[in-house]
Image (cartoon, rainbow, N blue to C red; front, side):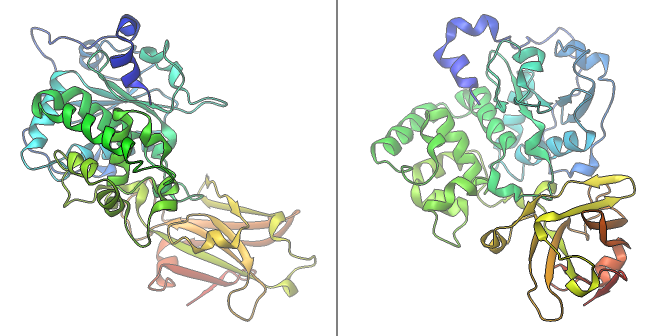
Length: 420
């Protein structure tokens, strides 16, 4: 996340940073819309290969860029290794973050037009073994390997690795931060605010220096926010959107939201973000990757099996057709207290009648979203080759046995019987 180092602290390096593209005599792109509401991930169409008009307009390497989504004239790009589902998730975040709903009244058209005029685009690159994967992006080949880069006037490209876009069953996304939210804020800042809000840079500098002088973020777990004024703003935008709880928790009174925590702890930073983001909108509440979930609890009885059940030895598998979902095991009972957690848990039984519970977290089954919510699921648990359960259920079956908290009990795993 170091675009500002290249743009502001290493001017002599800009020759290696790439450049923005000046407008051609005839612009082949569709114009940026004046008004735009939010769009959902499943509303976007992935186009492959990338149209020649887009390749030419943005000087793209067509050997690397093979997929494309248009978000109001802004290209969301990726190589073939990035799944189309994740590219749609990126498009959804861009659509929400740059929407009239999320931006301050009157700022939406101005910000979108400024980004469009500077040929702003977004790339999603796949994470590589042992690295973030950014150096495979043609425009970043001479840059340090990073999880993300914000756009600069010299290189109006925001890039992040795909990990930030996954709806995962093994961890609570909102606690992890969101690289795209962070880098898009860099991009809005560096590509638009110098003309739209001429006093902004001086106000940001003053707020950052005040935060440093008063140690506003010391001891809060938010160390990265102190790096420089650019990261101060971008990390602040994650707090604004309630997506950096893993760092903010030590200094945050419960049940205060991260946005409330930001407003209380650093009102100057909060007020700066409020100049272009709408305080009345909760973006991440709407995003697919942060939606709720259902919990399927498999209730195991020792008497049903020939060997001693060992929760650490149980392999947990969840399928829909041939698609297998990744599940992470958690053995720390304290983790269970987090209402946002999306893990596979295994613990001693919570109610009498059996010996162990294993919780499997599914997406919110009420969503009409075929990329995430499947019409049927298969649950298979084994221990050293012994099948503990192997059951298949339709989505409607699971929903019919869900309680008001989204919990579903598989009370007889050997006979595949659900119960309320």
